View (spheres, rainbow, N blue to C red):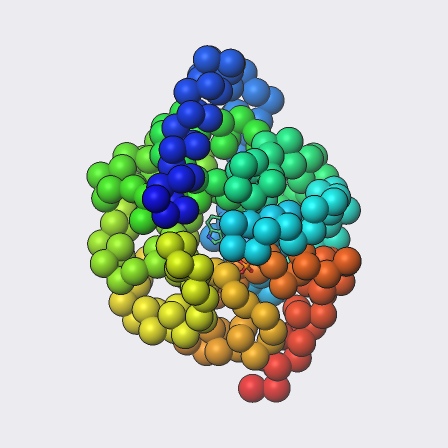
Length: 266
Ligand SMILES: O=P(O)(O)OC[C@@H](O)[C@@H](O)c1c[nH]c2ccccc12
């Protein structure tokens, strides 16, 4: 069984438990449920920002613990003060050490788009995403059929959430559905964990014209960002590079400063 199959199994169990503990009607009573979202697509394109979506990630299946005791309030506020365009918060507990609580805390302290990073396999999780205060939802093409991507993104849009569709392989591009605001190419192969940013660059010209395009994973320095930027990407999802340092926000600031300097000199 590969990691995606393991994750799916765990998610199925988790969703069943949560449905009985917190029925949909309860989620819809959340103070966040009817609050309008802050647009991720818009913030990525803001000229006064860097395009970086900075991720709060304590551990991962490929790395193990990255920053076990990181404080979500300090790190997420620091990211935004450093010039990030948006936040990504892992809410998966078993594999990534995140939680819905982490996202709610990030929401309390930040006015900016927050992406919920999890593995969506059931409509229930879409409502849950809105109820914890997120602005955007990740859909991983590899885990879903084209029909599911369409249905899930329609549900997300109905309740005002934006969608980021993540693809890895070229054949997943056909799962893009109308209205999806952001499309991301994951440089990490979720089955064997190999990472290469050239992967995004190679796929760029095949991506649909409408969505804002971002590159995800394995971004280490300003050189990586410039390569992706020159290929056409407007957004960059970065986690490990920041989280593995004692001061993730400082690492974020240095990367942004280096990128802006490079970009200006071109
Ligand atoms: O830590 P990195 O290599 O900077 O990558 C961040 C982000 O792209 C990665 O965490 C990610 C991309 N897609 C995902 C799907 C699920 C969980 C995590 C991810």
